[in-house]
Length: 255
Ligand code: PGA
Figure 1: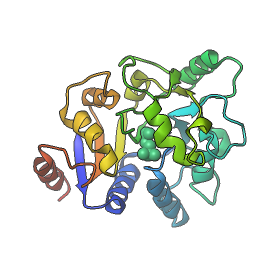
Figure 2 (figure 1 turned 60 degrees about the horizontal axis):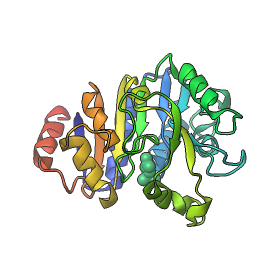
Figure 3 (figure 1 turned 180 degrees about the vertical axis):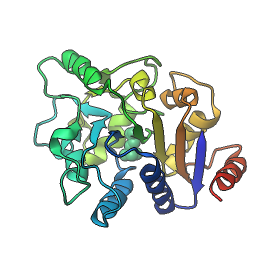
């Protein structure tokens, strides 16, 4: 794992944007995440697009997950969130037809999961990830299979509490089920870029970087991936035993 520990979230976001623009092969598939963590990164991609330095025109984008049963026009439907961030010439150049999300409105969510797994099979070049305070990546909650493919997931109480801020702070409005890429699906991406900011992520990042691989902390599966870059701020890195060592390595690679 390549680990960057930045003093602040803003500096971490700038590092993540640089890594993405250097390492994502334009024209290929970009794996995109929702949540608040990548929003600053998407700002940077839009700025770079406006400056003519980056484009997702000709590329495709694949979401990690989607709520099941959320209204088609709900602003928190992940398809709508990602379209608002990325789609259009005034954003990143990504075309709406090239944005792929699991179909949370399908009559058969199981079939929608299988269809999404097939759609993503050609492969993601670079996958952007956030992480839940319970260690989930995508919506792979603790206790699932480390070898899972796209499937129907049930959100934990913790995740629904964390996400209530997007639903008028009312947990009852947060959907209970989702479609999510599985851990094996995420692991099929060629490169992974994980961002984690704030003290709420510190325990999960301790587990992901220094803990044992375990379905209880789903993000720990990334220790088995050969090409992972993790960008943290100091708050998210607060529990790392070898933080100074990771900084030394990062600096020696980025001289
Ligand atoms: P957040 O969510 O970026 O809003 O903290 C991350 C996640 O749940 O994966």
